[in-house]
Length: 171
Image: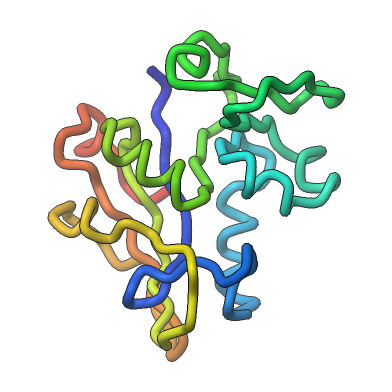
């Protein structure tokens, strides 16, 4: 299967959202995220997908996990109902693949060892939230600091059971 990198942000307690929205606003972190996934393949859950703008899907090959059968009206948006259907997709060879969330999909991909690595921004401040990243699932992964400032630190975690983790150097 093609290499897949997770990419998300959370606070120290794993908070990623409050009422389906980021509870923080750090333009430098958002720019890092946008530049990392720009024009690549993104894999996301339906709840996360409906929060995205139409412009977002124009610039990405998009795979949406959903339990509801969907017919895509957009050429670059593909709906899948599960892992078997996902594995049958021909993901673009010339693009990197990023699993961008939400929480349920991140947990699913981590529990099923579907990610080779993970770019995780840890926001320094704590926020109220109702949606959480499963930090316990990557606690033992080796990591490398990519970027740090007063507001957040961006880490590149490497899946120790992935065949390609030793070959990864940066994103």
